Image 1 (cartoon, one colour):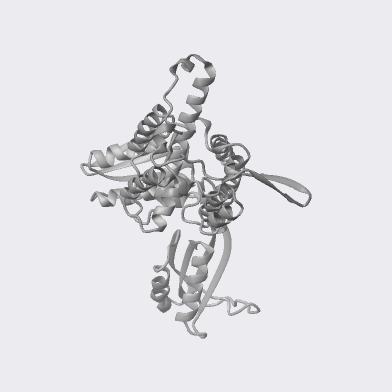
Image 2 (cartoon, rainbow, N blue to C red):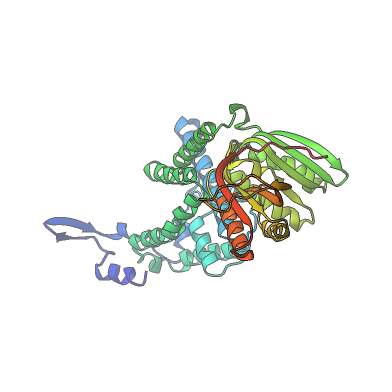
Length: 433
């Protein structure tokens, strides 16, 4: 603005005139400046009261519905986006947000004003400048009102291009290239949904673009095995374990479109009835990224209330990416099996190394036999010796760490052999008595 306002004054945008550039004539004038009242408190002369007679026309209700849907949706999306930007990770009361937007739009419409929404750009500006409470938005509005009332002639000098540049800059920060990288780490399908939604919004409008993104996500979920019957309805089984602990088993799917009734069940059992809750997801066909993220947020909410929310069963599902919040689907999980044959006296050290890692399966037994001496050696049949056989199933990273630990803890002359092979694991819950 410090550059654009002097340039606008130098080009005399306050008066209509033209200039020629590359043999083409361009018209300049006040239409390239921010429209403002002509005098102090001139905004009160710009008031226009409603004409209720147009409510008898279909097109009036069409625009009322569009403003209602788009305004509400954009406000909710902005509120959720601000939650992710908030350094304190506080939660928005969405009901109160929609109520305030509705009251504000009603009041604005009665004096000829434009519809208002919860604006992500101003919220981001407030956060970047150290705002910590909702009073930042309140004072933001007060300052805007005071400037329009007291400084209309100065605000009229602002070129629209300056506002456009600020919006583009803020928008770029909200959709920075690293955001695409972060989304890709969660899963390739998330990046596809992200990009398609952005293209849809830019090519059409916010409402249609978001609907395109939702539609694509539904199609991908169905392709990943989500039953059609559980798209909007969660199948939950509630079991009371004791007076203070309840188990909720989810079946079929736990995805964004059936999350609201799922969340209500968890809140009713846990936060309302004051119980610790375990959510078992092992019998689902798919748990998507949105649900995993919301469950992790609810863990923190329960902890703040002095309760415990425990999420189990995700380890029985195959992640679509290496991120902790990536979607999970039923099916085999790619892992490695590590078999260690070692002298009995080395078993305790190897067990200690294995216990430091997250291992999907562990098995240990005492054996007798002979160990092959090397790749070119042969085993001679004769007297057997006791040894320990340890078998673990884990991810590639964990297996590599275990091998490195065993190599560091043993000498080159120690009798030990390690075998490793890639496998695909399918888990099923087993009751142990």
